[in-house]
Length: 58
Image (cartoon, rainbow, N blue to C red; front, side, top):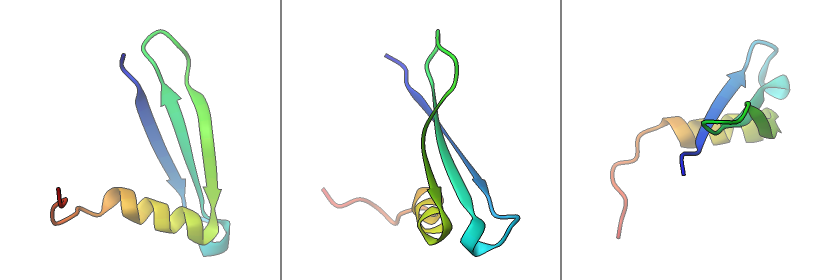
């Protein structure tokens, strides 16, 4: 199974109105919105997803 998640963020309206949207796209299906986050939560999640970790402990 192939399952692709697509993340989009809009910060143009300031910190409190920042929106992060998570979409899902499977090969034979149309894009669907899975979840949305707003404000500080959106910024924190975006940072977690885009900042490289220095390694993962086993």
